[in-house]
Length: 113
Image (cartoon, rainbow, N blue to C red; front, side, top):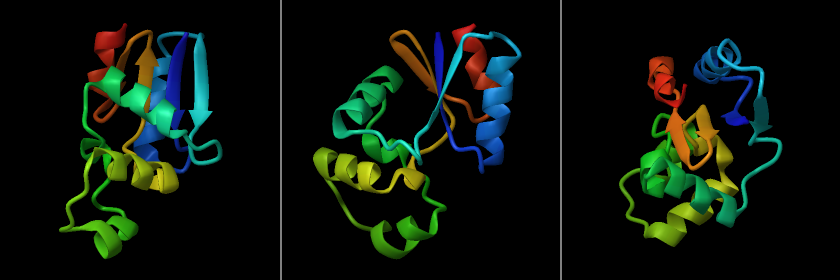
């Protein structure tokens, strides 16, 4: 089973989901804006991505530019920020077992298949 953390309003996220669905029917779609991640779920996802929380931030979002840009936060503060503001999370994130990858560009997803 492949999980896709997805925002249906995002063009890149839709492209990533389509890419996965063309390769397998075993897809669980997680709309993380409607069902936000818990701190623990986010930490597990970060381990699978092998990334730090600040690497997961969409810096072009208005909230980032107005409230976060230029500030320094520690690991736990970034976790809290992302849990409280899931729109800041890069997408799509595709998970297969213990491996996760950002699907931007979608060709990056090929390593999961």
